[in-house]
Amino acid sequence: MYAVREEVEVLKEQIKELVERNSLLERENALLKSLSNNDQLSQLSTQQANASSTSQQQTVIAQPAQPTQPPQQPNVSSA
Image (cartoon, rainbow, N blue to C red; front, side, top):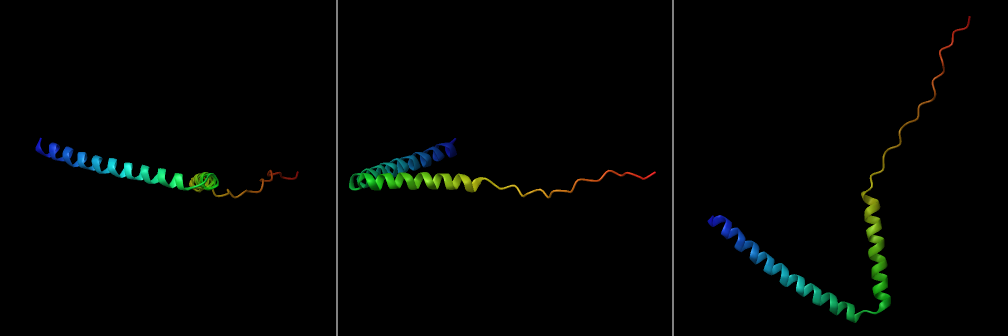
């Protein structure tokens, strides 16, 4: 029971740190947005969309081509 309480305290501290970091990053993001113009924001959106589609394409694994075999000739004996 003591170990569980200790783990809960550690997790609470991690949550607190993550909330603080998230808050800091949100403020930084708002500041950067306020300092940028619409052209820069649209360029960033375009770059993110391109990066997303590129990463999706890279995750698709190409199948190797199967070698084609020539059609077999029927075995016909002459009479």
